[in-house]
Figure 1: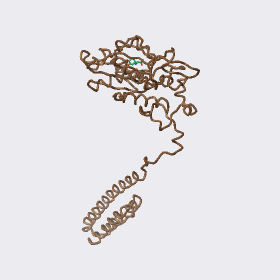
Figure 2: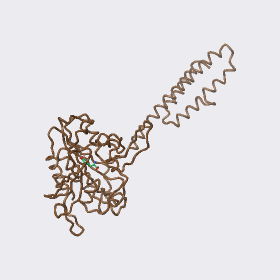
Figure 3: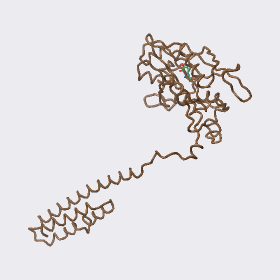
Figure 4: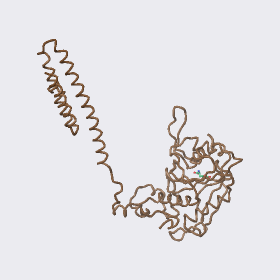
Length: 362
Ligand code: DAH
């Protein structure tokens, strides 16, 4: 075979490689060139018929050809794969700009807990609070110790904690029993002033008509140089008026004890029960809705703040509880029963976004 013929064969093969428009036809080209009966392999078979002095040169030429064709095949394969992938990425794109189906809009329901979280967020955002978050699986340190609840403190027993198995280093993660660890995480990450709320899930090993193993709280924390109890009372009163959509609320502050606040208080809200209806701001029945107080100096110290320079308040509200109160839902367990009939009755339309301007619960 003359070198001109070699060159012509090479050109033909490389053209075929370049012309292959998909991976299947490229593989056909590979088989036809380098396969057992391919044109390059067939060339090799002619080797034995050659005079010994020509064999070496011929062998080298065939091998060189083989290498170059193999290389071109590999390159083309990469290019085709990439093109195939980008074609798939384009063709399989979901058009999320499509309008929702009308039926979904009228049938879908926002869960009352989600709605109430949105209402709370809206009210506090309007007062200048930012939203903070923390993990559901917490360290013992953030859930307890940093909040001035050292190991062996009796408050730990009151929390009915779900513990994870002990790790090799002896530490034990917990499902957070309250949203208060978000106070710690926020202060660890920012310098004062702080003004945040942190809504989220919390977990306790407890279940009856008014307790579920998972429920929701919203934590609030304000730290600066001069915030005092008057601000706390004002914030709570403003919140309750906006949330329950009443001009006056009756609130009762009772002295209490939480390790992370000093002084500590529990707050009851006054209501009247008229038939099945609950009226906030009237009557002489009381329901406890939250715990609060001035942040304990030890908590401030634990996050590296100087209690001689900064101070502030914190509170924690049970979201499910105030949702029950506001919307007259009698059984907490039904919140998490995934019963569509319940959701249709108590749920909210997808477009009923609570805003202060429009009203909280249209
Ligand atoms: N973490 C408390 C609980 O779940 C509630 C609480 C009380 C939160 C007082 C606070 C607070 O921020 O100041 O029982």
